[in-house]
Image (spheres, rainbow, N blue to C red):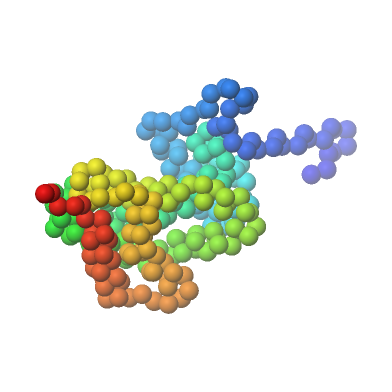
Length: 246
């Protein structure tokens, strides 16, 4: 806006920091992200606000707008995420794992039955149930489809998104599933030597076909989805079954 006669022009807005969590000077400590229940609520509000704004306006939306939508300061946003790329990655990862989260809105179960399974049969039943609910949630999630389309579109405009996504790694993209597989391996119900490969294989068997087909307008119905889940669970558990005791 032009300055009014007799008034000095307004100073420009400060440039947003690239990563607030990086040390300001070499050798100084890195600032840790806030913790605690209040911080978790703020983080969730920021992710939700960012998700809504990214879908409406794309990755070019400003961090000021995200902070205002979440009802927090811009410093709070940077304290939690450090950069817009990290925030975008958290938004996408949340969409991928949301159907299996404890607060996933009732579309899919949480992972409690899976990680507390007491043997191969209960593990198979729990993973099959989770896979079926997961598939239903993915097929019904129009917002998730829109976000995946946004990612594919924005990668051309903002290559830093691709770099941030690759640096995050599969286990970071899908934290709920990664944590469940890690726990099952620690309990001896699975033998998972490479967690990142196992996460990608589970998604590839149970979820990715439905995401890909739905993204291109082809319908994956309940019956085909169920066959994918039942066979996928069988293949996954056969691959990662622990060696029988001598």
